[in-house]
Image (tube, rainbow, N blue to C red; front, side, top):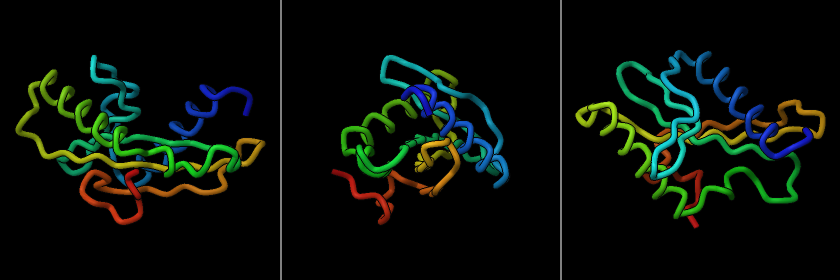
Length: 128
């Protein structure tokens, strides 16, 4: 993969394909507010799912999960709440998921892990 943005976009496309195969439906991609950006917003059985996708090629910068810090967690929650307010969906069920994608140097999927309810004490993510 040639650039960081291309790698990130490819990882988001891979994650979206995986989530749609799980029965989720895309509402928005790369939604931005003053609070920040959320990669994917999907719906699953009436629940809004805000998805942060972290993609890495190799381990030079650590695993995708290591990029999800405590401050990133707080930002994800703020962005989700901003979306709910902007769309008048404050009473909706919602959650934040994280999808970690590791790619080979040629762009093939080495690993994809989907962490549901990432803000709710998911034991697989270690908030730093």
